[in-house]
Image (cartoon, rainbow, N blue to C red):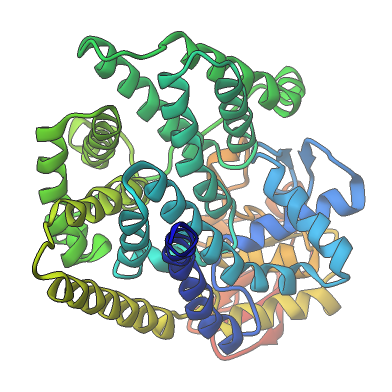
Length: 466
C-alpha cells in the first residue's frame, strides 16, 4: 500500500511537467526558428564565446564603439556547451530547449509545491500554470526561463535553512543563488528581496528561525557570482539603464494570471493568512511584495509590471492549490475527484490553446534581411536601423549593428534617428560612425549618399556610399 501511495504521488508531481513538454512541442514543430526575439541577442553572445573564449567585451553590438558584456554568462555557456555536444547549431538547440524548459519549470513548481503542501497541491500547482498567459513565457529559451527553474528550489532551500541548524542547506541554497546571479540578475534580485523580507517578517513575528543562515546564503552566493562579476566590474564598472515603464491595468493582471488562478489565489492568500505557518508567511510575503512591486510605477519607479508579475506565479498557484487540501471528502470523494478532473481538463485546454496561438516575435522579413547580410554584408561597417531587427542581424550574420539588443547594458551608441528618420546627417557623420548600411521600411524615401541593394516585402536595405 505504501509503495502504491509513493507511486501515485510521483505520478501526480510528474504529470503536469510531462503535459507541459507535450504542449510546448506544438509551437516547436510548427516553426523552424525559436519563438522569442530575445534569444537572438543570447545566440550572438554564445557565438562570441565560441570564437573568442569567455570575454567581457563585445565589439559588434553598439558599434562602432562596442560595449562590455554586462549580461551574465551562464545561459550563453550552456547554449555553447549543448551546441558542442549535440553538433547542432545555436538556433536548433534553442528551438528544442523550448519543451525542455517548459518541462523543468513546471516540474520545479510542482515538486516544491508538493514538498511544502503535499502531492495534490503539487499536481494542481502545475495544472494552474497552463491557465496563465505566463505559460507561454515558460517555453521561451532565454536566461529568465533557466532562472525560473531555480527559483522554487531556492526558496525551498531557504525555507529549510530557516528551520534547521545545519549549514548544508544554507551553503547549497547560496550556491543556487550564485548560479541565478550568473544567469539572470533580475530574477535573482527579486527572489533575494523576497527571502530577505520573509526573514524580517518571520523574525518580527517571533517564529523559530535561524536568521543568520540568510547571511550564509548571501555570502556563498555572492562568492560564487564574483567569479564573473569581480573582473567585469574591476575592468569596466557596472551599468544598468532602466527600460521604459510598462504598467498593467487591473484587467491586465487577470489576463496574465487567468481568471481561475486570480480568484483562487486571493482565497488561498486569505486561507494562508488565517493559518500563518512559516511556509504560509513566506508565500504570502512573496505574493504581496511582487504584486506591490508591479505597481511601483505609481511612485515614479521604472518597472516592467508584466515581467515582474511573472514572479508572483509560483506562490499564487501554490496558495490556490493548497485550498483543495482543506476540502473534506469523507462522503463525497468522487465529487471531489470530478472537480479536480474538470479543473485539470480546463487548464490543459487553456494551455494547448495558448501554445497553438503563439506567433513568432521575429518576422520572416526580418529573418530574410538577416540572411541577406550573412551572405552579402561586408561584416565590417555598421548597420543602422530600427531597434527590433538588429539582434537577428547580428546573430545570423555577425554584421556589426548600432544597437543589437539588451539596451540596459549600453554605455555609448550613435544617434540612429538622423539616419532612419530625419536624414539630417553628413558625410563626416557617416565616416565617424562607420555607417555602411541603412535599413528602412519600404514606404520611406531613399536616404542621402546611398543606393538600394536589397528589398523584401517590408524592408529596404541601402548601401551607404561615401
